[in-house]
Image 1 (tube, rainbow, N blue to C red):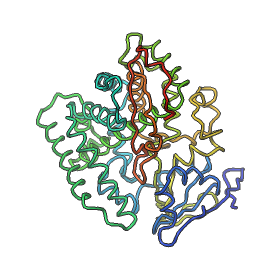
Image 2: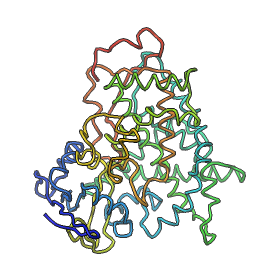
Image 3: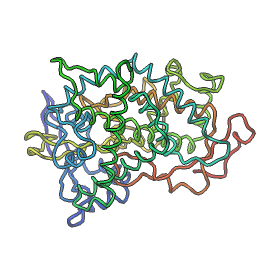
Amino acid sequence: MSSSARGAATTTYRHGKPPGAVPLLGHLPALARDPARFLGRLHRYGDLVEIRLGPYRLVVPTHPELLRQVYADDRAFDKGGPIYGRFREVLGNGLATCPHADHRRQRRMLQPEFRPERLAAHATVMSREAALLAGSWRHGEVVDVFPACYRFTLRVVTRTLLGTEVPDALAERLQSAFETAFAGALRKLWMLPAGPGYRTAVRTLRRTVADLVREHRAHGPGRTDLLAGLVAARDEDGSTLSDSELHDQVVAVLLAGTETTASQLSWTLRLLMAHPEVLATVQEEVDAVLPDGGPAVWADLPRLSLTTRVLTEALRLHPPGWVLLRTCARETELGGRVLPTGGQVLVSPYVAHHNPRIFADPARFDPDRWLPERAAALPRWGFAGFANGPRQCLGADYARAEAAIALATLLARWHPVPLPGRRSDDRPVRLTTVLRPQRLRLRPLARGTATAGRPTDSTG
């Protein structure tokens, strides 16, 4: 137990450690074996929990007030240290990985590209690509969900970012390179060999991004895509992004704009198939908003309230950014414990989202918990689907619009049905940067057909 003073009030915080640590590796085997189970139980051991992952000792805040302190103070709880050093080998020093010293400048320069009027223009691309995604499915043919959603999100982000379309072969190459590069970075983090494909994957990412930027520049001025805005961006002192900074921002946008939303869409479809009564209600809403069968557009979003709540609840249950790491830039007190300079803090949206002190009955899929009157009663810092505080995802509104447009467009045309005996395939991928299903497959049935409304012999 420890007390921490804040103003006139004093809160007593519980400190603890989960059982099951093994020599040298600590809790890493438990986290690797079943990340959802390990993280989902951490709240049981205290408000500030210490875990050990290989050579690293990290504290994990589970109490809303401690989460607030870490999210709000990005000077004390910065991005840095050996862990982020590994990820910078892949992502560079873009907005997603840069320390506080660089963050304000970079965010100011990128912010104009995510204003509402720009998002409305990007939504035109989202609608067009969502229609192509829905049109690529065939009645009764099996769909491997995450790769399909990944190709959709990559086409959207490259067209809004670069004003160009990406062939499926390039999409698959980028996805494979990201997966291999991050898997290697994680292995190096735990003092293991990165694997034979790591260096090749990093080179592929760098070369592909450099080619995309070079091709963009070759088309000359007058373009209105996001990259053109980044090239033209000026800081308050008139400075521009360097070529290295521009490269790092493109890599960061490609990662943030693809795997995360593809993961959210995949989990949402999985949850809807497991809860057919919710699926039916969502499709009623979609039919009312899109009587001609879609695709959804920017102007439709305010009327897709249940669709939006379903996506938010999926983001709560399966947050793609499941762990966020922070390093103490100075000696800092948290929950009555003094953390040294360089101390590691693991902020996990998954931990918070499955804490019954923050979300009642946290394992239950309940989209109505996001009704305005119920959501207002939730701790402000408990939900972190797009992180929180000064480091909240700059593209959160972009991602929300993209996911809602895609889901509504798919459900207007298709009724998703799970495959028999495939429940185990949709468990999360182990120790990856984005919490996504290992493999999730479904069978789309055309809306309005006699079979679309029949019960399936699988519970998914």
